[in-house]
Image (cartoon, rainbow, N blue to C red; front, side, top):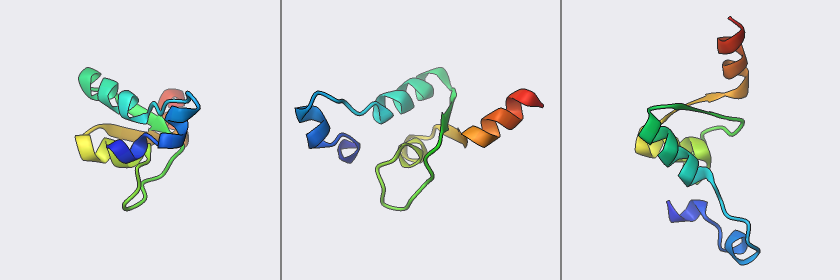
Length: 68
């Protein structure tokens, strides 16, 4: 998961929240909403979610679920 926290962001004081969001979602058994898509060998949020077993959906899917 270290690849999701980029050195440049640490240096400029802009931390990456993806791993923390995924961990919190796992602790709460929650589903994350993201505009990112799963990409093989990527460190994006969907990849992190898949790795640790957290459900995630797109923003469009979220809107469908809340509007019925």
